[in-house]
Image (cartoon, rainbow, N blue to C red; front, side):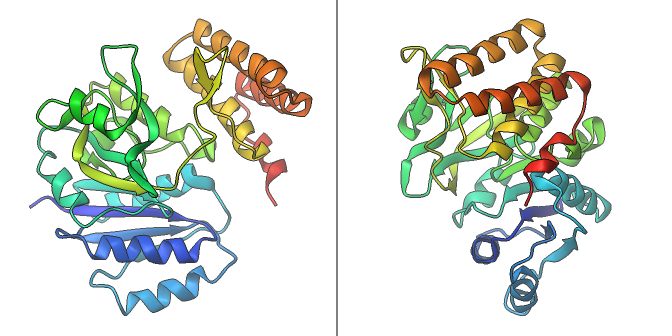
Length: 305
């Protein structure tokens, strides 16, 4: 039997952490181990984890970081711990998601066919709505409803697309081929980089549509712009925006090319000049773009409390 290890990254959200750990413990097919990476939380996360250790069927292995390394650093540390413990399959998620009881069991039935597979990620308050828009492979169509994905899937599988890291399964073989997450990204884009790296290595990627993963709605993602012809991933957080611009440019340079970078810069300038005018955000964008060009992954630290 393949050894499955869940990896959960958390920071100062003890209530959500308790919820997701109970949901993991309630799976019809539980993982063999659960690794929780505590990103130097300052709330009662440590106390909650100690209490849950006596309540859960599978007591979590806790990795406590000395400082907040973001989702990227957390997933790197968690994957390394899971790999060292002999994991054959890595089940990756943040602390704010909730896997329904059959999430993992459904994924596992496909684990021998794919290297990087995940559930349909749906909005917690409206499970027929996708939490993140999906572009149907082989088309220019972007869909927002679970029904559209179900119709596009073949035998319950939408090949070539997956939403990382929301309940995804990654095989040990893939981890050994491409390594783990780039910790320097901190947040935003580390998951995309890992997926693009996997695709470049020839990974078999798929969304397993009958498996669902609940996630809080992300209403700012995919904000319409350019008269509705495209969208932009706007965030009210300067930290998230800085990391998004820096990391997205880094990814586009590596995997798409300079035209991809230019198109993204044009979209950013248009969005904060015409769609949602914000001169201060343009300055943040310029700083992040310069950092990406220099390969500097330290600039986000000024936004940390």
